[in-house]
Length: 548
Ligand SMILES: Cc1cc2nc3c(=O)[nH]c(=O)nc-3n(C[C@H](O)[C@H](O)[C@H](O)COP(=O)(O)OP(=O)(O)OC[C@H]3O[C@@H](n4cnc5c(N)ncnc54)[C@H](O)[C@@H]3O)c2cc1C
Ligand SMILES: *[C@@H]1O[C@H](CO)[C@@H](O)[C@H](O)[C@H]1NC(C)=O
Ligand SMILES: *[C@@H]1O[C@H](CO)[C@@H](O)[C@H](O)[C@H]1NC(C)=O
Ligand SMILES: *[C@@H]1O[C@H](CO)[C@@H](O)[C@H](O)[C@H]1NC(C)=O
Ligand SMILES: *[C@@H]1O[C@H](CO)[C@@H](O)[C@H](O)[C@H]1NC(C)=O
Ligand SMILES: CC(=O)N[C@H]1CO[C@H](CO)[C@@H](O)[C@@H]1O
Image 1 (cartoon, helix red, strand yellow):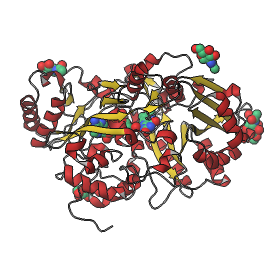
Image 2 (cartoon, rainbow, N blue to C red):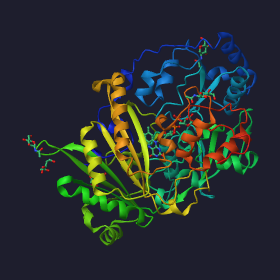
Image 3 (tube, protein in one colour):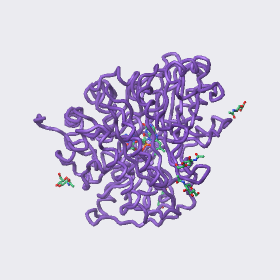
Image 4 (cartoon, rainbow, N blue to C red):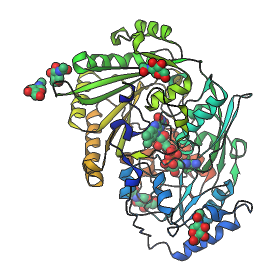
């Protein structure tokens, strides 16, 4: 039953309708905007070697459309088929940095020759901002800069931006069975992009987000300098933790403090359909899950299914992670959430790293070597939206949600409980503002495949996602309706041109960052006053003090 689960290891696996890579014979139409002259590109290419380290020739890292691997490298880490197949413009050049100086040279030369840079680590951006742009651009691909050094003496790890969450978990497990790290459930996320938006997973209630455990970083600024925490200063270091780093510079590496975990943890998945009382249990979960002891994290995942008599119904999965063993867990559940009826038989004990595999949806018994698979090979088209809830959704709100879910195919919804460590950290401690006062965060994702209509079905599925979002408006946070930047959604406001307009930025910025948006705009003015690092939802520099 375990792989019926529920994971984010890949949206494709979840719905078992993934297309595999070879299928991706999507024609790449190079539409190089007339705004870019070929001289500009030639000058950029000529500039690169003069700014990179001699012992590491940058020629080995430069791909233009003339190189046979250009297309495959471009596609390999373009996670969302909706974006990959619809993008009208392609990069002029891809720099697959093999040495930090290649990233520095890319910045210096792109700035000098007027090209926009898109930074890509794992390529999981929901709107593909790491690999598409409406203006002429080059991709700086960080994927090869992927070293990890785990130091058990200081209980820290130094992780380069191109490493994946899976690799980090694996390297920690190699050194220790009683250490872990709080970051994403999916094991192919790039550390570079993932931490930039906070980074959360099943250790969130115990240890907070990835960024809450970051102690240093190396950042390349718009002048191509490599800065660390000390040289970038506390204001910029504050901003890159949760503020969407891509507005401030290029993350080369993060240094993190590892967290302690017991030698055995316990996981479970309990499922109930509507006729088994799922509505009442989901109602109760909202009151209980954010207040449970920090060691216990229970995600709620409702989904539409066909029941035995071939009628549509909702099945709600309660997916649990406990930093302890079965006896104690069953006691805790009996005391706090007896309605769920958790039994010892529902529980599986394993090491922490094995629990990461369980949550990622790998079948029981899978070797932890799968953590070293760096790219997701089966992919789907998808559109995601997010919400934060500060009040319990009433029963009629749940009924509305169920109804919309049963009307939409290919949808999954995840409710992730807050509380615990998340409410102990002030909402101004880092740029990530969604802390105390939230009961849970929700992700709504609609996925589809080529056989559901592929790209031509996109507008229909996007409209369905908006319909669901509208239906939940009465219950979700409001003024602003908060959103999670790692679940990037251009619907919350964006500047199509990539030229960041302050009023437009304030709209999406306050949804993603609350009032921290204004402080982020100030940090941007310190590190990148000329606004070199920008995209459709970046932070503009605030050069004068705002009237907020
Ligand atoms: C299947 C799936 C599961 C997910 N599960 C989780 C989860 O459990 N928890 C969670 O918090 N999030 C989750 N996410 C969201 C994920 O954290 C974000 O999409 C994140 O931005 C991905 O980082 P990346 O490096 O893989 O993506 P990329 O697309 O490479 O980058 C994302 C953004 O960060 C920027 N960026 C990338 N690298 C750098 C760098 N080195 N320096 C500066 N900016 C950079 C990019 O320009 C882009 O704007 C999931 C996403 C997917 C598709
Ligand atoms: C790309 O093509 C050029 C020209 O043929 C070649 O010199 C270069 O080595 C190729 N780059 C890579 C990374 O293969
Ligand atoms: C199947 O779903 C229908 C409609 O929701 C419901 O009336 C019926 O009780 C369900 N049957 C089972 C076996 O769950
Ligand atoms: C359940 O499905 C059957 C046919 O499979 C149908 O006759 C019946 O009306 C449905 N019941 C409900 C409650 O929708
Ligand atoms: C999981 O696998 C282990 C051995 O790999 C086995 O002992 C255990 O029974 C399995 N559990 C389930 C629920 O399949
Ligand atoms: C859609 C939108 O807001 N576009 C704006 C993007 O930024 C430029 C430059 O600030 C504005 O002129 C556009 O109006």
